[in-house]
Length: 283
Length: 267
Image (cartoon, chains in turn purple, green):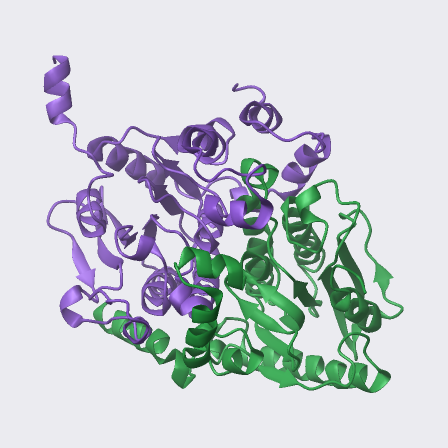
Protein backbone atom coordinates (compact mmCIF):
# COMPACT_ATOMS: atom_id res chain seq x y z
CA UNK A 1 0.00 0.00 0.00
CA UNK A 2 1.27 3.47 -0.80
CA UNK A 3 1.56 6.05 1.96
CA UNK A 4 -1.42 8.01 0.76
CA UNK A 5 -3.55 4.88 0.50
CA UNK A 6 -2.56 3.96 4.06
CA UNK A 7 -3.55 7.41 5.19
CA UNK A 8 -6.92 7.13 3.50
CA UNK A 9 -7.51 3.79 5.19
CA UNK A 10 -6.78 5.24 8.60
CA UNK A 11 -9.77 6.34 10.64
CA UNK A 12 -9.15 8.52 13.61
CA UNK A 13 -10.66 7.29 16.87
CA UNK A 14 -9.90 10.54 18.66
CA UNK A 15 -12.04 12.55 16.29
CA UNK A 16 -15.11 10.44 17.03
CA UNK A 17 -17.65 11.40 19.65
CA UNK A 18 -18.47 9.12 22.56
CA UNK A 19 -21.37 7.34 20.84
CA UNK A 20 -19.41 6.77 17.62
CA UNK A 21 -16.46 5.45 19.59
CA UNK A 22 -18.63 2.91 21.36
CA UNK A 23 -20.15 1.88 18.01
CA UNK A 24 -16.74 1.61 16.40
CA UNK A 25 -15.51 -0.80 19.06
CA UNK A 26 -18.54 -3.10 19.15
CA UNK A 27 -19.19 -5.85 16.62
CA UNK A 28 -21.27 -4.55 13.73
CA UNK A 29 -24.96 -4.45 14.50
CA UNK A 30 -24.61 -5.27 18.20
CA UNK A 31 -24.59 -1.70 19.60
CA UNK A 32 -27.53 -1.10 21.92
CA UNK A 33 -27.59 2.09 23.96
CA UNK A 34 -29.10 2.23 27.44
CA UNK A 35 -30.67 5.48 28.69
CA UNK A 36 -30.24 6.98 25.25
CA UNK A 37 -30.62 10.75 24.71
CA UNK A 38 -34.28 10.44 23.73
CA UNK A 39 -35.05 9.41 27.28
CA UNK A 40 -33.67 12.77 28.38
CA UNK A 41 -32.24 11.71 31.72
CA UNK A 42 -30.40 14.95 32.36
CA UNK A 43 -28.56 16.62 35.16
CA UNK A 44 -30.99 18.10 37.69
CA UNK A 45 -28.33 20.60 38.80
CA UNK A 46 -26.99 22.41 35.75
CA UNK A 47 -29.94 24.49 34.55
CA UNK A 48 -30.31 26.33 37.85
CA UNK A 49 -26.68 27.41 37.44
CA UNK A 50 -27.20 28.74 33.95
CA UNK A 51 -25.50 25.79 32.25
CA UNK A 52 -27.41 24.07 29.42
CA UNK A 53 -27.73 20.36 30.23
CA UNK A 54 -27.30 17.62 27.63
CA UNK A 55 -29.82 14.85 26.96
CA UNK A 56 -27.33 12.07 27.77
CA UNK A 57 -25.41 14.06 30.41
CA UNK A 58 -22.26 13.41 28.42
CA UNK A 59 -22.08 9.66 29.05
CA UNK A 60 -23.01 6.88 26.64
CA UNK A 61 -23.70 3.40 27.99
CA UNK A 62 -23.84 0.71 25.31
CA UNK A 63 -24.13 -3.05 25.44
CA UNK A 64 -23.04 -5.34 22.66
CA UNK A 65 -20.27 -7.73 21.80
CA UNK A 66 -16.63 -7.25 20.91
CA UNK A 67 -15.08 -10.14 19.01
CA UNK A 68 -18.08 -12.10 20.19
CA UNK A 69 -17.53 -11.39 23.90
CA UNK A 70 -20.32 -9.69 25.87
CA UNK A 71 -19.30 -6.18 26.88
CA UNK A 72 -20.73 -3.00 28.25
CA UNK A 73 -19.04 0.20 27.13
CA UNK A 74 -19.16 3.42 29.11
CA UNK A 75 -18.00 6.29 26.92
CA UNK A 76 -17.52 9.81 28.23
CA UNK A 77 -18.15 12.71 25.84
CA UNK A 78 -15.18 15.01 26.27
CA UNK A 79 -16.91 17.78 24.32
CA UNK A 80 -19.64 18.24 26.95
CA UNK A 81 -18.43 20.17 30.01
CA UNK A 82 -14.90 18.84 29.59
CA UNK A 83 -16.05 15.26 30.05
CA UNK A 84 -16.78 16.10 33.67
CA UNK A 85 -18.88 13.71 35.70
CA UNK A 86 -21.96 14.87 37.50
CA UNK A 87 -24.62 12.92 39.31
CA UNK A 88 -26.37 11.41 36.27
CA UNK A 89 -23.35 10.63 34.11
CA UNK A 90 -21.52 9.22 37.12
CA UNK A 91 -24.48 7.06 38.11
CA UNK A 92 -24.75 5.76 34.54
CA UNK A 93 -21.16 4.50 34.67
CA UNK A 94 -21.36 3.18 38.23
CA UNK A 95 -24.74 1.54 37.62
CA UNK A 96 -23.56 -0.15 34.41
CA UNK A 97 -20.49 -1.54 36.14
CA UNK A 98 -22.60 -2.73 39.07
CA UNK A 99 -24.94 -4.57 36.69
CA UNK A 100 -21.96 -6.10 34.87
CA UNK A 101 -20.67 -7.47 38.18
CA UNK A 102 -24.15 -8.78 38.96
CA UNK A 103 -24.22 -10.49 35.53
CA UNK A 104 -21.02 -12.30 36.42
CA UNK A 105 -22.43 -13.48 39.72
CA UNK A 106 -25.27 -14.99 37.68
CA UNK A 107 -22.86 -16.66 35.27
CA UNK A 108 -23.02 -14.09 32.45
CA UNK A 109 -19.42 -13.06 31.70
CA UNK A 110 -20.01 -9.36 30.91
CA UNK A 111 -16.82 -7.33 30.59
CA UNK A 112 -16.46 -3.57 30.69
CA UNK A 113 -14.60 -1.04 28.58
CA UNK A 114 -14.35 2.55 29.77
CA UNK A 115 -13.64 5.27 27.24
CA UNK A 116 -12.18 7.94 29.46
CA UNK A 117 -12.18 11.50 28.24
CA UNK A 118 -12.67 13.44 31.41
CA UNK A 119 -11.47 16.17 33.71
CA UNK A 120 -12.99 14.34 36.67
CA UNK A 121 -15.68 15.72 38.96
CA UNK A 122 -18.08 18.25 37.42
CA UNK A 123 -17.60 21.12 39.81
CA UNK A 124 -21.17 22.37 39.34
CA UNK A 125 -22.30 19.11 40.95
CA UNK A 126 -19.22 18.80 43.12
CA UNK A 127 -20.08 16.43 45.94
CA UNK A 128 -22.48 14.33 43.89
CA UNK A 129 -19.82 13.90 41.22
CA UNK A 130 -17.29 12.91 43.85
CA UNK A 131 -19.72 10.42 45.39
CA UNK A 132 -20.49 8.92 41.97
CA UNK A 133 -16.79 8.51 41.31
CA UNK A 134 -16.36 6.68 44.62
CA UNK A 135 -19.17 4.37 43.45
CA UNK A 136 -17.36 3.86 40.14
CA UNK A 137 -14.18 2.92 42.01
CA UNK A 138 -16.12 0.43 44.12
CA UNK A 139 -17.80 -1.08 41.06
CA UNK A 140 -14.55 -1.48 39.10
CA UNK A 141 -12.92 -3.35 41.98
CA UNK A 142 -16.02 -5.53 42.31
CA UNK A 143 -16.26 -6.37 38.60
CA UNK A 144 -12.52 -6.95 38.36
CA UNK A 145 -12.95 -10.02 40.56
CA UNK A 146 -14.53 -11.74 37.57
CA UNK A 147 -13.51 -10.01 34.35
CA UNK A 148 -10.96 -7.48 33.20
CA UNK A 149 -12.01 -3.84 33.11
CA UNK A 150 -10.29 -2.00 30.28
CA UNK A 151 -9.69 1.74 30.24
CA UNK A 152 -8.99 3.65 27.03
CA UNK A 153 -7.64 7.20 27.16
CA UNK A 154 -7.47 8.47 23.62
CA UNK A 155 -8.19 12.14 23.13
CA UNK A 156 -6.81 15.48 24.14
CA UNK A 157 -9.08 15.98 27.16
CA UNK A 158 -7.13 13.22 28.86
CA UNK A 159 -8.15 11.57 32.09
CA UNK A 160 -7.87 13.48 35.35
CA UNK A 161 -9.18 13.87 38.85
CA UNK A 162 -11.10 11.06 40.47
CA UNK A 163 -11.43 9.36 37.11
CA UNK A 164 -7.66 9.03 36.85
CA UNK A 165 -7.95 6.94 40.01
CA UNK A 166 -10.65 4.93 38.21
CA UNK A 167 -8.16 4.46 35.37
CA UNK A 168 -5.58 3.30 37.91
CA UNK A 169 -8.06 0.65 39.06
CA UNK A 170 -8.56 -0.75 35.57
CA UNK A 171 -7.05 -4.14 34.76
CA UNK A 172 -5.56 -2.76 31.57
CA UNK A 173 -5.04 0.73 30.18
CA UNK A 174 -4.61 1.70 26.57
CA UNK A 175 -3.49 5.18 25.51
CA UNK A 176 -2.61 7.16 22.42
CA UNK A 177 0.09 9.76 22.00
CA UNK A 178 -2.47 12.52 22.40
CA UNK A 179 -3.73 11.19 25.72
CA UNK A 180 -2.70 12.42 29.14
CA UNK A 181 -3.25 10.63 32.41
CA UNK A 182 -2.76 12.38 35.75
CA UNK A 183 -4.50 13.14 39.01
CA UNK A 184 -4.43 16.91 38.99
CA UNK A 185 -5.13 19.12 36.03
CA UNK A 186 -2.24 21.42 35.10
CA UNK A 187 -4.19 24.60 35.92
CA UNK A 188 -4.99 23.40 39.39
CA UNK A 189 -1.41 22.39 40.16
CA UNK A 190 -0.23 25.78 38.99
CA UNK A 191 -2.88 27.45 41.15
CA UNK A 192 -1.99 25.41 44.23
CA UNK A 193 1.77 25.05 43.84
CA UNK A 194 2.92 27.92 41.65
CA UNK A 195 4.23 28.43 38.15
CA UNK A 196 7.71 27.20 38.95
CA UNK A 197 6.34 23.86 40.10
CA UNK A 198 4.00 23.42 37.14
CA UNK A 199 3.56 25.69 34.14
CA UNK A 200 0.09 24.85 32.85
CA UNK A 201 0.77 26.56 29.51
CA UNK A 202 3.92 24.58 28.72
CA UNK A 203 2.38 21.81 26.68
CA UNK A 204 5.58 19.89 25.80
CA UNK A 205 6.49 19.85 29.50
CA UNK A 206 3.06 18.52 30.48
CA UNK A 207 3.00 15.82 27.81
CA UNK A 208 6.56 14.78 28.68
CA UNK A 209 5.41 13.97 32.21
CA UNK A 210 1.83 12.77 31.80
CA UNK A 211 1.42 12.02 28.07
CA UNK A 212 0.60 8.60 26.67
CA UNK A 213 4.11 7.83 25.47
CA UNK A 214 5.67 8.56 28.86
CA UNK A 215 2.98 6.64 30.73
CA UNK A 216 3.68 3.63 28.51
CA UNK A 217 7.44 3.96 28.87
CA UNK A 218 7.06 4.01 32.66
CA UNK A 219 4.74 1.00 32.75
CA UNK A 220 1.79 2.94 34.12
CA UNK A 221 -0.30 1.85 31.12
CA UNK A 222 -0.29 -1.38 29.14
CA UNK A 223 -0.69 -0.42 25.51
CA UNK A 224 0.38 2.55 23.42
CA UNK A 225 -1.55 2.72 20.18
CA UNK A 226 -1.73 4.87 17.12
CA UNK A 227 -4.92 6.91 16.73
CA UNK A 228 -6.66 4.50 14.40
CA UNK A 229 -10.04 2.84 14.94
CA UNK A 230 -9.02 -0.60 13.64
CA UNK A 231 -5.82 -0.73 15.69
CA UNK A 232 -7.48 0.40 18.89
CA UNK A 233 -10.28 -2.08 18.39
CA UNK A 234 -7.83 -4.92 17.81
CA UNK A 235 -5.87 -4.06 20.95
CA UNK A 236 -8.98 -3.80 23.11
CA UNK A 237 -10.08 -7.18 21.77
CA UNK A 238 -6.71 -8.71 22.63
CA UNK A 239 -6.84 -7.34 26.15
CA UNK A 240 -10.37 -8.67 26.64
CA UNK A 241 -9.21 -12.11 25.53
CA UNK A 242 -6.26 -12.03 27.90
CA UNK A 243 -8.63 -12.23 30.83
CA UNK A 244 -7.55 -11.07 34.26
CA UNK A 245 -3.93 -9.95 34.67
CA UNK A 246 -1.70 -11.94 37.03
CA UNK A 247 -1.70 -8.93 39.30
CA UNK A 248 -3.74 -5.76 39.00
CA UNK A 249 -1.57 -2.64 38.85
CA UNK A 250 -3.31 -1.03 41.81
CA UNK A 251 -2.49 -3.97 44.08
CA UNK A 252 1.27 -3.50 43.70
CA UNK A 253 1.88 -1.29 46.73
CA UNK A 254 5.03 -3.10 47.85
CA UNK A 255 6.65 -2.72 44.45
CA UNK A 256 5.86 0.98 44.18
CA UNK A 257 6.93 1.70 47.77
CA UNK A 258 10.27 0.00 47.05
CA UNK A 259 10.72 2.07 43.92
CA UNK A 260 9.86 5.33 45.71
CA UNK A 261 12.29 4.41 48.50
CA UNK A 262 15.09 4.31 45.91
CA UNK A 263 14.30 7.77 44.56
CA UNK A 264 16.21 10.85 45.62
CA UNK A 265 13.17 13.09 46.08
CA UNK A 266 15.24 16.23 46.71
CA UNK A 267 15.89 17.48 43.16
CA UNK A 268 12.94 18.38 40.92
CA UNK A 269 12.03 15.43 38.73
CA UNK A 270 12.32 14.86 34.98
CA UNK A 271 10.74 12.25 32.70
CA UNK A 272 13.92 10.19 32.33
CA UNK A 273 14.21 9.73 36.08
CA UNK A 274 10.74 8.22 36.20
CA UNK A 275 11.55 5.90 33.30
CA UNK A 276 14.71 4.70 35.00
CA UNK A 277 13.00 4.23 38.33
CA UNK A 278 9.91 2.43 37.07
CA UNK A 279 11.06 0.64 33.98
CA UNK A 280 14.86 0.67 33.91
CA UNK A 281 15.08 -2.15 31.43
CA UNK A 282 12.90 -0.44 28.81
CA UNK A 283 14.45 3.03 28.59
CA UNK B 1 -1.26 27.34 66.27
CA UNK B 2 0.12 24.85 63.83
CA UNK B 3 0.05 25.51 60.09
CA UNK B 4 -1.60 22.15 59.62
CA UNK B 5 -4.47 20.34 61.27
CA UNK B 6 -3.81 18.11 64.27
CA UNK B 7 -7.34 16.79 64.49
CA UNK B 8 -6.62 13.54 62.71
CA UNK B 9 -3.63 12.87 64.94
CA UNK B 10 -5.49 13.77 68.13
CA UNK B 11 -8.47 11.60 67.31
CA UNK B 12 -6.16 8.77 66.24
CA UNK B 13 -4.32 8.99 69.56
CA UNK B 14 -7.56 9.11 71.53
CA UNK B 15 -9.20 6.21 69.69
CA UNK B 16 -6.17 3.97 69.45
CA UNK B 17 -5.29 4.45 73.15
CA UNK B 18 -3.06 1.56 74.08
CA UNK B 19 -3.46 -0.16 70.73
CA UNK B 20 -0.37 -1.66 69.15
CA UNK B 21 1.26 0.69 66.62
CA UNK B 22 1.93 -0.80 63.20
CA UNK B 23 5.42 -0.06 61.92
CA UNK B 24 7.07 -0.18 58.52
CA UNK B 25 4.83 2.49 57.00
CA UNK B 26 5.53 6.10 55.96
CA UNK B 27 5.74 8.52 58.90
CA UNK B 28 2.71 10.39 57.56
CA UNK B 29 0.53 7.39 58.34
CA UNK B 30 -0.61 6.57 61.84
CA UNK B 31 -1.76 2.99 62.05
CA UNK B 32 -2.53 0.86 65.09
CA UNK B 33 -4.33 -2.36 65.93
CA UNK B 34 -6.71 -2.20 68.86
CA UNK B 35 -10.39 -2.50 69.65
CA UNK B 36 -13.65 -0.64 69.21
CA UNK B 37 -15.41 -2.02 72.28
CA UNK B 38 -15.05 -5.78 71.82
CA UNK B 39 -14.44 -5.59 68.09
CA UNK B 40 -10.82 -5.82 66.87
CA UNK B 41 -9.99 -2.92 64.61
CA UNK B 42 -7.20 -1.22 62.75
CA UNK B 43 -7.16 2.56 63.11
CA UNK B 44 -5.68 4.51 60.22
CA UNK B 45 -4.99 8.24 59.91
CA UNK B 46 -3.05 10.38 57.47
CA UNK B 47 -1.20 13.08 59.42
CA UNK B 48 1.15 15.93 58.61
CA UNK B 49 4.82 14.95 58.43
CA UNK B 50 6.90 18.15 58.22
CA UNK B 51 9.91 16.06 57.18
CA UNK B 52 8.13 14.20 54.39
CA UNK B 53 10.61 13.36 51.59
CA UNK B 54 8.06 14.76 49.17
CA UNK B 55 7.90 18.49 49.84
CA UNK B 56 4.41 18.89 48.43
CA UNK B 57 3.02 16.42 50.96
CA UNK B 58 4.19 17.89 54.26
CA UNK B 59 0.89 19.23 55.58
CA UNK B 60 -1.20 16.10 55.70
CA UNK B 61 -1.89 15.85 51.97
CA UNK B 62 -2.36 12.40 50.48
CA UNK B 63 0.58 11.94 48.14
CA UNK B 64 2.56 9.08 46.66
CA UNK B 65 3.83 7.56 49.90
CA UNK B 66 0.50 8.06 51.61
CA UNK B 67 -1.50 6.43 48.79
CA UNK B 68 0.69 3.38 48.49
CA UNK B 69 1.19 3.28 52.28
CA UNK B 70 -2.58 3.18 52.84
CA UNK B 71 -2.83 0.49 50.19
CA UNK B 72 -0.32 -1.60 52.12
CA UNK B 73 -1.75 -0.89 55.59
CA UNK B 74 -5.20 -2.05 54.47
CA UNK B 75 -4.07 -4.93 52.28
CA UNK B 76 -1.98 -6.38 55.12
CA UNK B 77 -5.18 -6.66 57.18
CA UNK B 78 -7.05 -8.39 54.35
CA UNK B 79 -4.27 -10.94 53.97
CA UNK B 80 -3.72 -11.53 57.70
CA UNK B 81 -7.45 -11.94 58.41
CA UNK B 82 -8.18 -14.01 55.32
CA UNK B 83 -9.12 -17.17 57.19
CA UNK B 84 -10.45 -15.56 60.34
CA UNK B 85 -14.08 -15.62 61.29
CA UNK B 86 -13.90 -12.25 63.00
CA UNK B 87 -12.25 -9.80 60.65
CA UNK B 88 -10.83 -6.56 61.91
CA UNK B 89 -12.83 -3.44 61.29
CA UNK B 90 -10.95 -0.68 59.49
CA UNK B 91 -11.45 2.76 60.99
CA UNK B 92 -10.29 5.50 58.62
CA UNK B 93 -9.90 8.73 60.59
CA UNK B 94 -10.32 11.42 57.96
CA UNK B 95 -8.65 14.82 58.21
CA UNK B 96 -7.14 15.29 54.76
CA UNK B 97 -6.82 18.81 53.31
CA UNK B 98 -6.17 17.61 49.76
CA UNK B 99 -4.18 15.32 47.56
CA UNK B 100 -0.59 16.45 46.96
CA UNK B 101 -0.23 18.91 44.07
CA UNK B 102 3.22 18.76 42.52
CA UNK B 103 5.42 17.89 39.60
CA UNK B 104 6.98 14.87 41.30
CA UNK B 105 3.55 13.59 42.20
CA UNK B 106 2.17 13.74 38.66
CA UNK B 107 5.36 12.38 37.11
CA UNK B 108 5.47 9.40 39.46
CA UNK B 109 1.79 8.62 39.04
CA UNK B 110 0.01 9.86 42.15
CA UNK B 111 -3.24 8.74 40.48
CA UNK B 112 -1.96 5.18 40.63
CA UNK B 113 -0.95 5.54 44.29
CA UNK B 114 -4.43 6.77 45.17
CA UNK B 115 -5.91 3.94 43.13
CA UNK B 116 -3.85 1.59 45.27
CA UNK B 117 -5.45 2.97 48.42
CA UNK B 118 -9.01 2.93 47.02
CA UNK B 119 -8.38 -0.58 45.74
CA UNK B 120 -7.37 -1.91 49.16
CA UNK B 121 -10.28 -0.29 50.98
CA UNK B 122 -12.74 -1.60 48.37
CA UNK B 123 -11.29 -5.11 48.52
CA UNK B 124 -11.46 -4.99 52.32
CA UNK B 125 -15.19 -4.36 52.06
CA UNK B 126 -15.61 -7.18 49.55
CA UNK B 127 -13.66 -9.49 51.88
CA UNK B 128 -16.16 -8.77 54.65
CA UNK B 129 -14.34 -6.16 56.73
CA UNK B 130 -16.42 -3.33 58.12
CA UNK B 131 -14.81 -0.14 56.82
CA UNK B 132 -15.87 2.98 58.68
CA UNK B 133 -14.88 6.53 57.74
CA UNK B 134 -14.82 8.98 60.66
CA UNK B 135 -14.71 12.55 59.40
CA UNK B 136 -13.07 14.82 61.99
CA UNK B 137 -11.71 17.51 59.63
CA UNK B 138 -11.46 18.11 55.93
CA UNK B 139 -12.30 15.33 53.50
CA UNK B 140 -11.25 16.77 50.21
CA UNK B 141 -11.41 15.41 46.72
CA UNK B 142 -8.83 12.82 45.70
CA UNK B 143 -7.53 12.61 49.25
CA UNK B 144 -10.97 11.50 50.45
CA UNK B 145 -11.38 9.10 47.52
CA UNK B 146 -8.15 7.42 48.67
CA UNK B 147 -8.85 7.54 52.39
CA UNK B 148 -12.42 7.14 53.53
CA UNK B 149 -14.77 7.22 50.56
CA UNK B 150 -14.73 3.45 50.11
CA UNK B 151 -16.12 3.03 53.63
CA UNK B 152 -19.36 1.13 54.22
CA UNK B 153 -20.44 3.80 56.65
CA UNK B 154 -19.42 7.44 56.90
CA UNK B 155 -19.73 9.27 60.22
CA UNK B 156 -19.07 13.01 60.41
CA UNK B 157 -18.56 15.15 63.47
CA UNK B 158 -20.64 18.32 63.47
CA UNK B 159 -18.25 21.22 63.17
CA UNK B 160 -17.59 24.00 60.65
CA UNK B 161 -14.12 22.52 60.11
CA UNK B 162 -15.56 19.22 58.92
CA UNK B 163 -16.16 19.52 55.21
CA UNK B 164 -16.33 17.35 52.13
CA UNK B 165 -15.61 18.78 48.72
CA UNK B 166 -14.24 18.14 45.28
CA UNK B 167 -11.92 21.12 45.14
CA UNK B 168 -10.80 24.06 47.28
CA UNK B 169 -12.74 27.28 46.69
CA UNK B 170 -10.00 29.23 44.92
CA UNK B 171 -9.27 26.50 42.38
CA UNK B 172 -12.93 25.65 41.89
CA UNK B 173 -13.62 29.30 41.11
CA UNK B 174 -10.78 29.41 38.58
CA UNK B 175 -11.79 26.21 36.81
CA UNK B 176 -15.48 27.20 36.57
CA UNK B 177 -14.61 30.78 35.57
CA UNK B 178 -16.36 32.34 38.55
CA UNK B 179 -15.29 34.55 41.42
CA UNK B 180 -15.05 33.02 44.87
CA UNK B 181 -18.04 35.19 45.87
CA UNK B 182 -20.14 33.89 42.98
CA UNK B 183 -19.14 30.36 43.90
CA UNK B 184 -20.25 30.90 47.49
CA UNK B 185 -23.59 32.33 46.39
CA UNK B 186 -24.25 29.31 44.21
CA UNK B 187 -23.08 26.93 46.91
CA UNK B 188 -25.71 28.35 49.23
CA UNK B 189 -28.54 27.25 46.91
CA UNK B 190 -27.11 24.09 45.32
CA UNK B 191 -26.57 21.43 48.03
CA UNK B 192 -23.91 19.34 46.23
CA UNK B 193 -21.80 22.47 45.77
CA UNK B 194 -21.88 23.55 49.40
CA UNK B 195 -18.92 23.14 51.71
CA UNK B 196 -20.80 22.66 55.01
CA UNK B 197 -21.55 19.29 56.55
CA UNK B 198 -25.33 19.77 56.80
CA UNK B 199 -25.64 20.29 53.05
CA UNK B 200 -23.46 17.25 52.55
CA UNK B 201 -25.63 15.24 54.93
CA UNK B 202 -28.68 16.12 52.79
CA UNK B 203 -27.16 14.06 49.96
CA UNK B 204 -27.63 10.88 51.99
CA UNK B 205 -23.98 9.92 51.95
CA UNK B 206 -23.48 10.06 55.71
CA UNK B 207 -24.68 7.31 57.99
CA UNK B 208 -24.55 9.54 61.06
CA UNK B 209 -23.49 12.96 62.26
CA UNK B 210 -22.36 13.54 65.85
CA UNK B 211 -21.82 16.60 67.99
CA UNK B 212 -18.81 16.65 70.28
CA UNK B 213 -17.59 19.14 72.88
CA UNK B 214 -14.00 19.55 71.76
CA UNK B 215 -13.34 18.55 68.22
CA UNK B 216 -9.66 19.53 68.27
CA UNK B 217 -8.83 17.48 71.34
CA UNK B 218 -11.62 15.09 72.32
CA UNK B 219 -12.80 14.84 75.92
CA UNK B 220 -13.43 11.42 77.45
CA UNK B 221 -17.15 11.98 76.90
CA UNK B 222 -16.51 12.79 73.22
CA UNK B 223 -14.44 9.66 72.88
CA UNK B 224 -17.10 7.48 74.52
CA UNK B 225 -19.73 8.93 72.21
CA UNK B 226 -17.69 8.27 69.07
CA UNK B 227 -16.78 4.74 70.17
CA UNK B 228 -20.45 4.02 70.77
CA UNK B 229 -21.29 5.27 67.29
CA UNK B 230 -18.47 3.28 65.67
CA UNK B 231 -19.70 0.17 67.45
CA UNK B 232 -23.19 0.70 66.09
CA UNK B 233 -21.85 1.32 62.60
CA UNK B 234 -19.85 -1.90 62.67
CA UNK B 235 -22.93 -3.80 63.84
CA UNK B 236 -25.00 -2.19 61.11
CA UNK B 237 -22.53 -3.33 58.46
CA UNK B 238 -22.57 -6.87 59.86
CA UNK B 239 -26.37 -6.77 59.66
CA UNK B 240 -26.84 -5.13 56.26
CA UNK B 241 -23.82 -6.10 54.19
CA UNK B 242 -20.68 -4.49 52.95
CA UNK B 243 -21.63 -2.70 49.73
CA UNK B 244 -22.28 1.03 49.30
CA UNK B 245 -26.03 0.84 48.70
CA UNK B 246 -26.79 2.49 52.05
CA UNK B 247 -25.71 5.77 50.48
CA UNK B 248 -28.61 5.86 48.05
CA UNK B 249 -32.08 7.10 48.84
CA UNK B 250 -31.86 10.79 49.77
CA UNK B 251 -34.13 13.24 47.94
CA UNK B 252 -31.09 15.30 46.98
CA UNK B 253 -29.58 12.22 45.36
CA UNK B 254 -32.74 10.91 43.72
CA UNK B 255 -31.29 10.90 40.19
CA UNK B 256 -28.60 8.42 41.27
CA UNK B 257 -31.30 5.92 42.20
CA UNK B 258 -33.43 6.65 39.17
CA UNK B 259 -30.56 6.11 36.74
CA UNK B 260 -29.79 2.75 38.36
CA UNK B 261 -33.43 1.68 38.21
CA UNK B 262 -33.72 2.58 34.51
CA UNK B 263 -30.43 0.89 33.66
CA UNK B 264 -31.65 -2.27 35.31
CA UNK B 265 -34.91 -2.17 33.35
CA UNK B 266 -33.09 -1.67 30.06
CA UNK B 267 -30.15 -3.99 30.77
